[in-house]
Length: 258
Length: 161
Image (cartoon, rainbow over all chains, first blue to last red; front, side):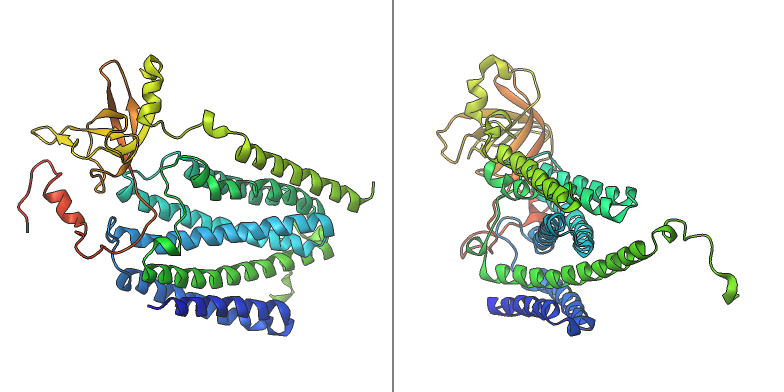
């Protein structure tokens, strides 16, 4: 499989996202195209990973989980970096939609990060011989999951939207300091986890299929984050418009429809 | 203080904390006090101090050093500092089934104890694989995982298919 096909998919995903951002009128449908590209890309990417990619010289077929593990973690880091950017921007601009973006990206990042770590453990068992060990990479990944879980928990405990946004922005900024440590952990310290690979260290077909899966997952990441952002925006709008109507809205349903 | 300048202050403070923490970990020479494993030469350099506590030892499996006992229940091998066969080495005794990728010349990390006998005893062996992903080169023997378990490294060598 030639590498350019994967780059075409990647560019299509990024281009569509650019259109989505630049032309508000397209926001009603661009995400649907991205969703189709994402789902189709993951399905075809799984086929490519399982049936087309050659077996590895050392790990045989087991390494194929890399095609899922690596993009999942990349997308987690990407989403959490956006969370960091939005957290900083919120404190400077005080725009609650930036807080909604932070919330959306933290959730999506934690979702992909959790899957990525689980897949890593499944890969580790047959290759390293253990599901888990406290090496620098795995430890910083665990810290990431715990800290962003805490971030989301904090959000649930604060009712006032302004306070919640400010506090969680602070937590988001401090939590993000783990991300570069996680990334560089395999270069700074000895670890069980191998260092980052790259196009130069992979068979071209393997690299190409990894890029294909990455592009597909990026489309899904955008769709998830956008949909979660819309939900967060709607929740925020309701909170700000009707602050008193928010918490106890579970019990009394208007009975006139009966 | 206006709300906006208060937020600015919070932003700067949070960024400063995050940046300071990151800088400390990145440039604070944590590596000297906090290592995931010792190499054989580092462990030997500690002399008696290395006897007793549970430690991790990491290096390369010395070619030609892997030995199984008759019943295939006990494994011993040597760990070199690096790929040079003459580099400092420590003998390791393991009572476990090694991961399938275990072989001569591959990176390993073992967890266990060292003592006067100069043999490192472990019951946790981890194989460190590389970040290169490629099919076998022409002439290179591809790994046949199913076969390695049933043929060579299993306790009772089974009939090959």
